[in-house]
Amino acid sequence: MKKPEDEKKGDFSVHLRYFRFRKERPRLKRKEESPIGNPGNETKRKFLAMEEIFHRLGYPYSNVLLDRIEEIEGGESLRATKMVSANEFFLAGHFPNEPIMPGVLTLEGMIQSALVLIHESFARGILKVFLRRVDRVRFKRAILPGDRLEFSVKVTAKEERIWKFHGRAQVGEETAAEADLHIQLDFRGVGFEI
Image (cartoon, rainbow, N blue to C red):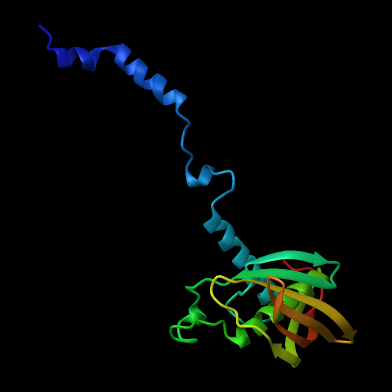
């Protein structure tokens, strides 16, 4: 004689009800199947692309301060954003218990925005860029963790190999910093890259 527990294990109607229930439930997707993609890989891809841009321009800075390029207008202006989080490496000692983004890194974000704009203006060739001068630097507001920092640069003049930019860093509608940048371009090689 079969025990009642054995009947339950061998009874197909119990298993069919179980599978029918599983079919009706929406299947959970893995991260790889997500329609918005894996955000970690997307961010990594963006940083690698930015590092390639800086490498092509011969710019040795290893930390990318731009999270996203929002808009490029005809090689004349660019808007980029950076979300300042509380765990940024530069906030650790600047200043203890009152973290503020250093002014020099705000300026660096403007410079990197200008370099991306230069990169978009030249389709071929290897360039060498130098920061020649920074004029009229003004810091008007502290940039704190949690702020959405927007960098905007605009070409004001092009003289032979010197490009002049006006850069601005904004938090919302408030201007946090602004400066005039002079960047020198030298062509190291023109032609097709393999």
